[in-house]
Figure 1: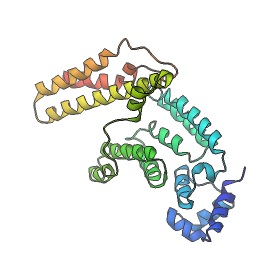
Figure 2 (figure 1 turned 180 degrees about the vertical axis):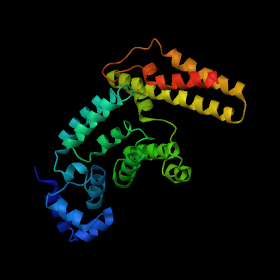
Figure 3 (figure 1 turned 90 degrees about the horizontal axis):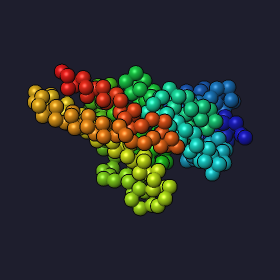
Figure 4 (figure 1 turned 120 degrees about the vertical axis):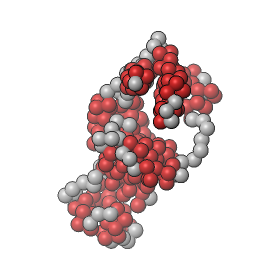
Length: 270
């Protein structure tokens, strides 16, 4: 397999570009580019999608990976990490970090990695990774997910003036791919799509109810707030007997919403 530094150098020379031009686009020094090309150092993982975008290639092409085989292996890594996303973020992140060692800069792995990072305590890393994916990915689903997470991170860290420009990048969509798959496909594909959407819908519904409740709290209308919070509690309770699908998740809906349950109890006791 060709080394990354050799590939960058080859692509740069094919386009008759100087190290300074590439460095200027990426916001680094030309000495940094020189070190990459000499395989003295490696670019930061968040820089790799931008390098691929500059040359108009995928990150897999940048590393000379077999695209079909890479996609299968990356999907397997992300599926394994997804199983721990709601119950063991540290393990989920570890799986994805190991995946990035095999497939550096892969958009799909980086996108999944965002879900394991605490947006409050690791804001700088989340923001840098989101911006890199938004600027360089050729996959709209990755781009829009990064926009969503970036906007949420700005909110978590009090950067409210930066939220609206990010939201403007998102199209208005009233359905999801999973919803359509569950409605239109058959057999195992339909089943898995419905299972995944069920978890997402439950989490989204509880979040919206909590937002409405907090809205009424801010207006001093505690009774109206309590109504929303109690509905949210009942939604979570409704999943108490739900079966775990071990091929997709390591925890149930109730387990994934345990932090919301605790917050709701605190809000209702105030």
